[in-house]
Length: 207
Image 1: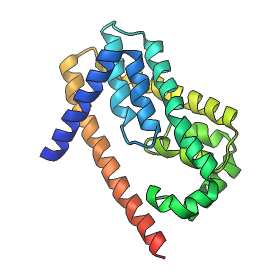
Image 2: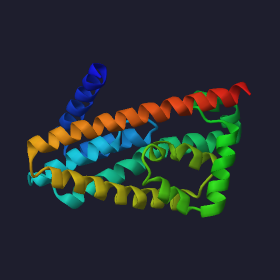
Image 3: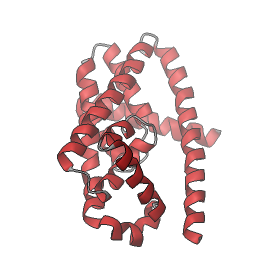
Image 4: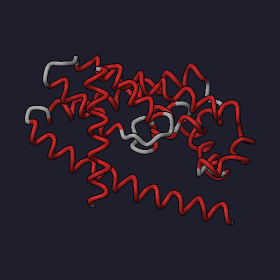
C-alpha cells in the first residue's frame, strides 16, 4: 500500500503541475498521453480540472473540450500505427502490445455488430478507451468517422468527469480525500485487469 501511495502522490503532483502551469493545454496534453496507449488515467486528470473550474480559474466547457481534443490528438499516432501496419503488423508484433489474432477477430465482430458506433461507445468505457485507437487503425475504420466519434465519445466522458471534480471542489479537503481513495481504487482495478489481461494473452500465445 505504501508503494501505491507513493505512485499516487507522484501522479497527482504531476497532473496538478501540468494543469496549473498550462491550463487547458495541459488538460489536452495529459489526455493525449492517455490516448497514446499510455495508462495515465483520465479518471485522475479530469476531476482535478473540474476542481480548477470550481475555483473560477477555468471555464467548465473549455475544460471538457480540452479533454476531448486531447483524446483525438493522442489517438492519431496510435490509429496510424495500426492503419499502416495492418493485420500483418498484429501477427508479427502484436505480442509486444499484448494483442492476439483472437483479439482482432473479436474486434471485427464488435464493429460488425455495432458498426462505427462501437468506437463512440468504447470512448466512454474505462481502460478500453485508452487502447481502442490501435485496433481501429488495424480495422481501417474510416478516418473522418472514427475521429469524429472519438471526439464525441470523449466529450461526453470529459463533461462527466469534469462535473464530478466541479462538485467535489466545493470542499477542498474532502475533494483531496475522496480523490485519493478514488485513485487507489482505479490503480487496483488497473492492476487486477492488467494481470488478468497479461495472463490470458500469454496463455493464448503459448497455445
